[in-house]
Image 1: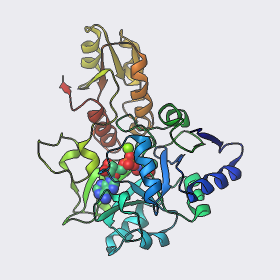
Image 2: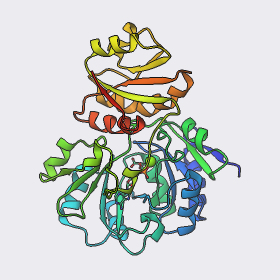
Image 3: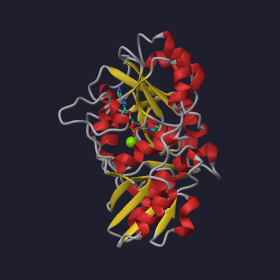
Image 4: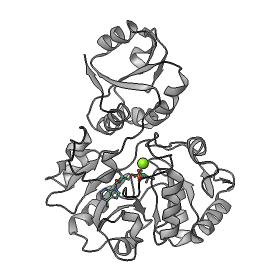
Length: 339
Ligand code: TXA
Ligand code: MG
């Protein structure tokens, strides 16, 4: 199939109209959001959802997030919505925040991969909200990458993975947040952080003081352990080059990589000029938001370095750093060296 490239920078309104028409006829369209590009489909159509799973090569039991563009739509997606969900919506929407709630019966079965819950997000990016408004559809949208690869933060990343497999790409700006939304489940006994993102645990605890951080945020699932979020059990974000996460101060990291051969380093800008092997900086160690913005691009660039192994300097786990650490530890298959 030919994938249409819709120009959201120079031809915005036409792009919104065409994308909406494609979605209304059960087609699938990649769309920018503030976090990462999403691969959107009508949340009411099992046919459209099935095309999303096929294009991405995604396991059928890994459920999708449904995107809405105003709070009134929430009642169409979820049911038995607790008051605390409205408090979260007031604090964190529109924005990079997703809630898992009991599923309403209007939504296609396949959105939730057979679960009786549904993940919902109201993004802040105007393009996806305008497409939701214009089409009148809630949009199920996973990240617009091939399953297992780093999430796409530019239109070029989407084309690299999905050209010829989807109906269209809305070619918009690069994503400003750079890591996927914070996912919190509100269906269990206590609210549970399933995936860290730009809305940090500190911010969540202002509304959800009894928030539990799921073990899978920082640890590999044990054999046979059930995943609170199906996405946790799959391999994620991995470059083809073998990648290892390294914890330690700048001095130790520089010394460690400089005495290795046939390797490259993903480092902080503060240590860049002291490193003598091939290297890419992903930002200042003091600026977790920039590290988040760059992390997926850098993971894609690793395979162009032509080395056997890459050592990635781990960020702090504070604030948005926790989200960056969470993506990197998965990209490294939970291989960590502590210096
Ligand atoms: O920022 C984002 O959230 C992006 C943009 C496009 O909005 N979307 C995104 O979708 O990251 P995806 O499909 O790549 O990740 C969704 C995650 C998966 O780990 C999935 O297992 C989890 O959310 N999830 C979805 N529905 C769930 C549910 N009902 N219960 C538990 N986890 C769920
Ligand atoms: Mg994804």
